Image 1 (tube, rainbow, N blue to C red):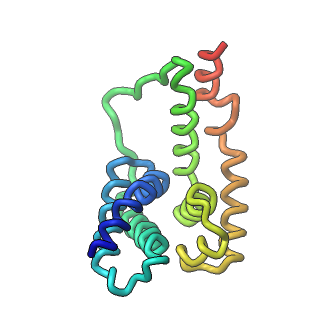
Image 2 (image 1 turned 45 degrees about the horizontal axis):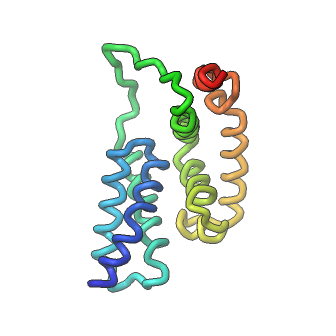
Image 3 (image 1 turned 90 degrees about the vertical axis):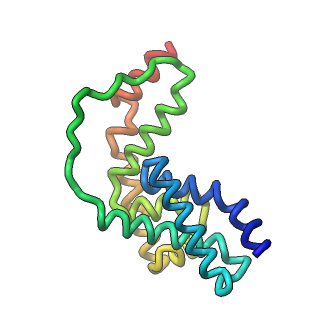
Length: 171
């Protein structure tokens, strides 16, 4: 089991980041990464060492899909409006990342998973297809549609309120 301990230590952060990008929630990402590692551990005797990270990523994506199916789809009312974005120029990168995460959340589950695996996890089209259990052509078309949506997303446009706040602080 020493092999698994080394694998878990090396894979924890990449799985956590993948879970965060898929879910948009740090807490959900921790749950996804931890459960993916537990399930990888229980199947460790079947998992090839050179393919262990791919196996764990696939488990994480499937867990996220299952979570979305069970998730209640309703708006949540808040007593107070959200705080205004900070205007400190040091927060620009954080705000840009937040806008990207918000834009990713507007994509469908399949689109978000394909984009995150392909461009953030830097998997090839073939590896992404294997992880998602689809064909390479499906990965290409899903990524193409998702990137077109992201390019057109008002959340990522320079004239979006978040971008104005960020650029106004820099001037």
